Structure formats: structure tokens, C-alpha cells
Amino acid sequence: MKNNQPWLNIVLLAFPLLALILHFFNRTYSWGQDTVVLLMLATVPSLLLTICETVQSLFKRQFGVDLLAIFSMFGALLMGEPATAAVIAAMTATGRLLESYAQGRAEREMTALLSKAPRFANRLIGDDIHIVSIESIQPGDLLLVKLGETIPVDGPLVSDNAILNESSITGESLPAAKQSGALLLSGAINAGDALKMLAARSAKDSTLQGIIRVVEQASLSRATTARLADRYAVWFIPLALGIACVAWFVSHDPVRALAVLVVATPCPLLLAVPVALVSGISRSAQRGVLIKGSAALEQLARADHLFFDKTGTLTGGTAKLVSIQSFNLHYTQQDLLKLAASLDQLSCHVIASAILQAAHEQGLRSLPMPESVREVAGAGLTGKVNGQYVCLGTLDFVLSNARAGSWLESARQRLFIENTTVVAIAVDGELVGWLLLSDQLRLETPRALRMLRKTGVREIVMLTGDKQEVADSIGTGLGVDRVHAELTPDMKLAHVSRASASSCTMMVGDGVNDAPALNN
Image (tube, rainbow, N blue to C red; front, top):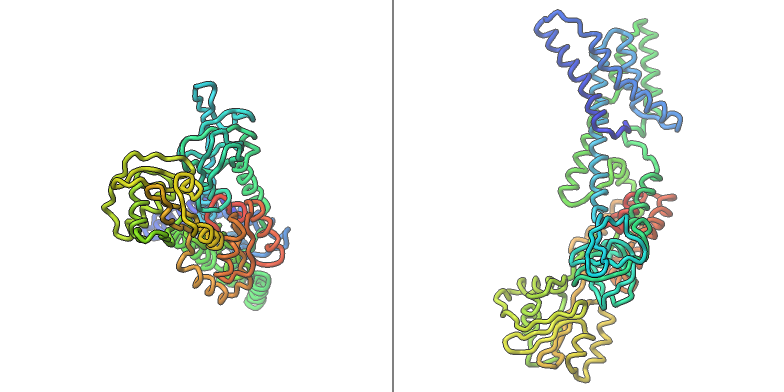
């Protein structure tokens, strides 16, 4: 049952179902109508389609339980039992429809991962902004990308600086600061002020379209997987046919052979397996887990190699405040958080949102409103909070506006070990401390990995586009077997494909950058 056209499956189910309903009322209320021909005609479409699919499988040396359904329907029609044939046809059509629904849902969810691909872009011609389709963009075009918009094509940054959310491309959750001349990749989201860039490639040659092509190629080249219910068909079908022949030989009545075939036809499996698969996929989707089709769910118990994306899968995928360090006795950690959160009230930066959330979680809900706030995109903010001049942002930005004590160098060295994002804060021209943010592990991650090992997973591998040192620190803490960092989407696909050639693999990810490997 491999057909994935919903309308065809609905028609194949409707024919025998309606015929059986009419046959039931005809017998119950003695209408006197002959429904034999109707039942036969209703069975034929499902029978022919099942025969075609089974013949294709036999050419590939694959046997399935559908073969018994064919013998049962064909035999019932020959022996004048059209109602029996229609019942089996209805069951096979129901199973086909449920499998089609499960596959269609998985494909729709996978397509949704790629829905961030932009369709239009802002092209600058002189002082005028023209909204054009991305297909019409040519190398050399000057483009404007507003706050929250997706970079349409690859190209160098023309503006002095920019802040990008590249998590969908590289998997790194924290914003990336770019300077003039840096290459911007399509698919990244502008998280700062509007920026100008030059198109270096056409849309079809850009990064995001390349990811989409890899997904499509992986989808076309994926290996066929036998259904769980078909694993025992190789010995069960000959056994059932043999018993049917013995029954015919002993009783000299072909109806006895048909009875054996009908009983042997695994109608409960034809219905129960698709129902169980659809239920499992739907239940997982409700919990935020997308399973790529029924075949992937069936193979889950056999998986012995597990590949995990890091950002958003093993970790939360968003920056969280992990610690506050004060280097001035006059300012407590609470004071620094209050000053930073007050200034960040007028910023749209994702780091500012994380600091504000941390302040609210610690009970700092009544924050003073800052004055004379100026924001330098990609660097930080300055302003007055309760009469104090506050500078907040990257360490380099704050040091360009404030002085620091002799303790700075030793404290700076420790930052390289901690692998965190630093938000420095200066008050009245003096660096007084900083806030450290990081993408934290999910609380349930260690326990989940331990449980997976108990189920038979022999090797756990982490694949990420994040920096090697960050990935190594997380991988060591979790006890994964191997860590591969700074990977592009096609590199992730290559790792999964190599492992799939010799073992049963499972890939778990959450973003566009994981889509090719997930679709393999």
C-alpha cells in the first residue's frame, strides 16, 4: 500500500463501503435488488491497484501481506462471494488511506521547515526601493533587508555592521555580528537595524536554495523500507496457500480453500498497523516531535546509531542568563541586572529580550525608564538610568566608552574557557561587571540519552554548525561518543548517509539546517 494520493484512496474506500451498505439494506429490508454486480464492480478498483503494487514489489523480490488479500478477493469473486471480496477491499483501502495520511502529514511538516525561504526582496535603485521577486535578483544588485526579514541571496554586507540570526543555517543560537564586507548567507534573519548588501549570487545559487535542493535529492534517493507487517510474509504466505490447498484436496470443495485464505488474510493487520502508526505520529506531533513518515516510526526500535543536532534539540535554542560577575563592591549582581534590564527596555535585540526575561524571573518587574538612549547596531547601548550614565554591550564597545582596572586581563582569560556570550556594563565611565549568557542544555537531555542507550543505541553522535570548542564542551558533559562541529547542512547529510549504509540510523533535529539529514 504505497499510493500517497488522498483523493484516490478515498474513492477506493468509498466504492466498496457504499456497495456493502446498499447490500446490507437490501438484505435487511428485502428490497429485492440484485447487488452482486455492484459488489463486484466496487471490489475491482482496489483489487487492480493492489495487484499492480504487489507485482512491482515481486519484481524487487519483496513479499507482503497484500498478496493474500489479492488471492482472497480474486477467489471470492470467482466463487460467488462478492460481499466477502468487498469487505477485504474496504479494509485494504482503509489501510492505504491511513498510511497516505501519515506520509502526507510528515511531508507537510518537512515542507514547513523550508517555508522561511523569501519570495520577494527590496532592490535599491538610486533612492527608490523596488519590491522584486528573488528570481529576478542578479549579481551586483544593491538590496535592502529590514529588521526581521530574511537575507534573500548570498552577498557581502555594504552597511557598517549588522546583527544576524543564523540559527536556521549554522545552528548557532546566539546572534552573529557582521562587519562591512562580511559574506551574508541567504536564510539568515536580520536581527538588527535595516542593512544594505550586494547580491553576489542569484537566488538559485544561494545557500538556502542549495539546502532545499539537497532536501529534494535526499527525498528522491531514500531507501525503500519494508513494512513491519510484511516481515513474516515470506514464510506465512506459502504456509497459508499450502493449508488452503490441503483443505481443498481433503474436502473436494474450493470454498474450503477460500475460507482458509480469508481467515489467513491479516485484515486486522491491514487496519491495526496503519491506525497504530497514525496514532503514534499524531501523538508525537502533539508533543512537538515530528516523525518523518510511518517507515521511520517502524524502524525506530531497530536504530543503533543516533545523530543529534545540538541547538534547539539537546539545548533550548535560546540564550539564557547563566551568571553575573561584579567587579565593583558598590554594585551587587542584582544592581547590575537591574541597570542592564532597564536600558534593554528600549532595545529589540534578542540578547536584550533574554536579559529582560531574566530580570522578570528574579522579581525585577518595576524597572526605571532610561533616558537619552542610543543604540549602536551590533555593539550595544548607552543611556541614563536614575541619573547614572550606563553603557551596555560587547566588551570592546564598552571599553571604548569606559575604563577598567588591572583585573581585566585575568578575568578576560577566564571568558575564553567558559564559552559564553559576554554583555559588559559600565557605569559613569567605569567597567563594573558583566552578564554571561549561554544556550543551556535541556534539563531532560542527559536522562533521555541514558534511556536511549538502554534501548539498544550503541553510538550517539552530535552534529552541529556551532563552534568546535562549544560543541566539545557540551558533548563531553553529555557523554556522547563523537562530536562533529562547524558543519553545513550537506555535511550533516554526508555523515548520516555514511552511517546509514552499514547500520540503522536515527537523526533528530529541529531546523532548516537539519532538513537534508532528516529527509535522508
